[in-house]
Amino acid sequence: MAGFLDRAKEQAQRGLAQGKEKVEEVQAQRQGSDLLKRLGAAYYAEQRGSGSAAEVQQALSAVEQHIAQHGDGFLRGN
Picture (cartoon, rainbow, N blue to C red):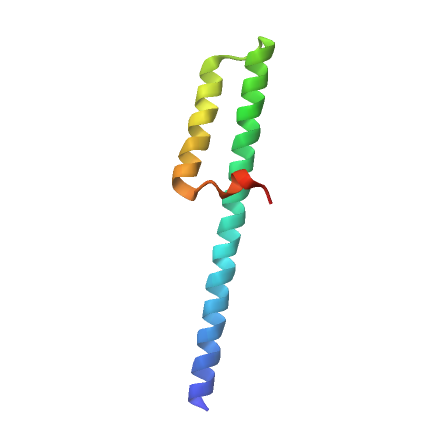
């Protein structure tokens, strides 16, 4: 009986770990998408004359930092 409970507990812990990993992945994808929107808005503002190249560069740096930390999976879409 104890072996069964140990296996059930182990499976539950694995399931929780996988769920937490998936949540973190989704959060990273959302953050990446938000950074891309920010980059697009900065670029658009620059092209329209109301933004600056520095803002575009700052947004691009944030995207590149996110890619270095989390990978580029968010670029492929959902």
